[in-house]
Length: 339
Image 1 (spheres, rainbow, N blue to C red):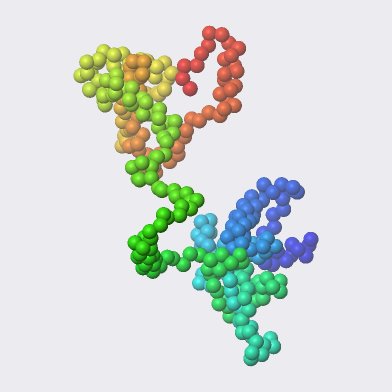
Image 2 (cartoon, one colour):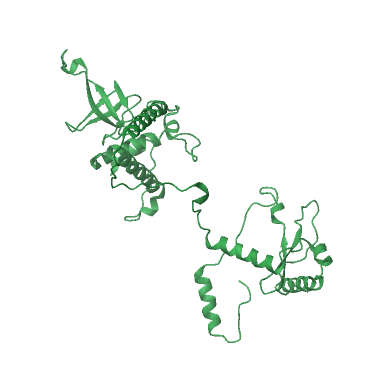
């Protein structure tokens, strides 16, 4: 263990031991392992490569990850370690087909093949690649490689695009042949067992059904329109000029009494050179005809960094709500008015 400690110190690595069987103590490394593993699984699946190449995929992912910018470092890990900006022009699609040049010094003769087909599985340094040959199960390192990034282990090829002009010309010739055959046809045509599915016009296509929240909002708006109470006052002055001003005044008084009873705020002297958040009334009528008034602050007028630095949301856990309900269940004549 002493030799190991001396070696890692000589490499500039800080040694921080953790307790056994506690991977959560090494969260940074475990998170990076998860990132590399997920990327390697994606590369193996996309290229259709055999699973025994998972180690090569991990190393290739680490090579690429070290050349990506890091928010913590403000630069790439490669630049932080070596002091030089990395180049990414040599990176190719992992698992793509590659033709490795066979050097003459390896015993190649004039009539032998000058290249050998394989697949890219990793990088050594700079423009040096690791090529895997499935026929011989060997890994070769070379810098003289020609890549075909449209072919992979499972011989899948990407769509090269459609020749629209050629298709149009072919369809025109086919239509002419069909018309010629129909003009000379005198017998009854033969029917084949085929099912033709025709797409519906755009105006007949079924749209996505609205969710429960949208349906509820539509139902409330429709009910309000039928009852004639969809024109709510937008402020205090409109409420006092309305025909039902008395009901709005009672709703506002009830809201203020509730605020004072619960001691929602504490009156303090107004500080100098301070921006005061204004308030407004939100007036609505419920489905049962009850007039509801809510006194709200215009929090949207504040700007982050100038008026506030932190935000808080009074969110209760389900365990807290269950505990509260359990306590109230044993006490009679007690009820919850608002949560």
